[in-house]
Length: 410
Length: 48
Image (tube, rainbow over all chains, first blue to last red; front, side):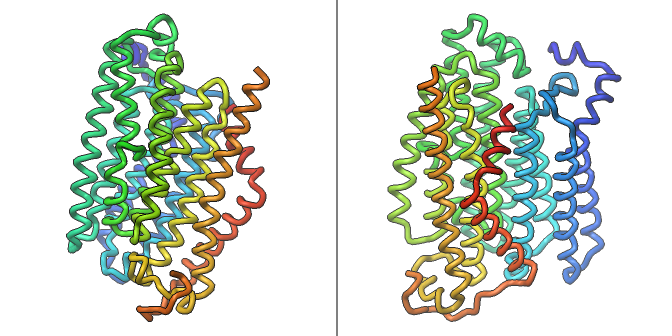
């Protein structure tokens, strides 16, 4: 309510300066959608080229934004800080790489349609809005814009029964997660009386610490965030969706949407609910221990490489939550490091199996003899998969040792 | 599994662009693995 009351036209116009990259991306996505109507199947590649260019230009626009301190714009709905800037640039560049990998995959399966890129661009727009959210409303709007595009992308191969099944699973579980998150947000709003993250943080640190309603709200938020990230015990959708969706969509879900889910966790927990960190960090630690254990152990038993990497993702989510939960907000502020490492490793790992997918299979026994069919590529994929994992583990170790050092300094 | 006899002999390949990006990706992965300092610094700056 305060946000609306303080809203003025001049302030709004000043704020538009900060949402320029998002505006550009939204307008370009609409333009590409229109332009795609004029292209025939042979010219369809150009939609992809334009999409990649628009992502790179947007990344440049985000990069040149002067961010010296935290800027809150548009009546407290939008914020721009260094974390937002870095996460947005990484998201945009990652998706540009994903698009480059996708074109050929889609072409070979005769499902190269302009909608893939347009849905992807809108999903990125949603992720950007989420990353820069300064209010529970923008947070939810961004999340939904991204999720709805992803549901459609999973079902992109219309002829594939398994893709449709995955899309339905993803949609049902994703909606449930959104519902839980929304329920948690509404409880938080009821308890603190504000939708703005800054005002929520003030209310929580000024004597709301042990409010029962707040605890309920936090529990629901954690369940929602856990679902979106795919932490155990909310991980059941990950292997099915990763396996069922076209591989180019799997890469998208494994990278961009995970970065956005991380931003969601960061905005909600350490930023808005820093005052009750003791409560939510306990929950995060439990989720992370379960994710690391189950993700790694169950991955061993998989005979489908996409399912194996999906379980590997679950364990990576565990490392990230461990960092966020154990390091807390004040202690080890390095918990974003493994996140970025994770995104990198996903691109590395996934391009390995995107490579495999070009051969047309994901079942491990059918990749037999890949060294003989494409020696250099296989070695590269294998190295990449190992390297990616090593990098994340190293990220986790760096983080834990940093945290220990901070503990000693205290 | 990587070193067993092949059961499918489809040739695996890709366009020049895709190979280039994949190679750049691999080099970046290698670079970040060996010299992670830059990435770490960016992350630390993101938290200032």
